[in-house]
Length: 131
Image 1 (spheres, rainbow, N blue to C red):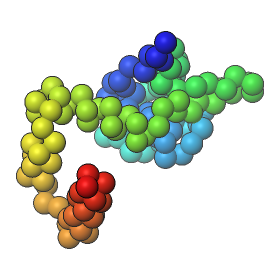
Image 2 (spheres, rainbow, N blue to C red):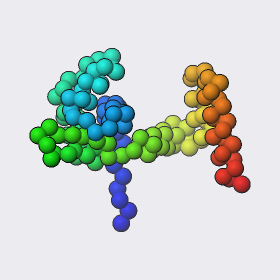
Image 3 (tube, rainbow, N blue to C red):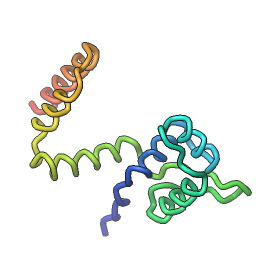
């Protein structure tokens, strides 16, 4: 039987995942403080706690209960989450067209010379794998 992938994270859950991916395993307080420092609005401590509890139930994060203060860590990788979210967006909003996704992304914000060089490198690598 194929394992069921965890559900896609909500916007608030994704903000928490970004903290966990950046800092590694964290307590609720550490996640709360990081969110407070990086967001325009203050998400309350109890809201962060409830979100982490819900994310644990969904299988998005894992909780270490071996100490008095529980520690949470991401159960899904950043790369996999980005890929799954982009695949869903590409299918729903762009009819599955990678060209449309890239064109729209590049039209939204001027890419730096470094970003364009990295994109060219990725395209070259992709082309070589296809041959």
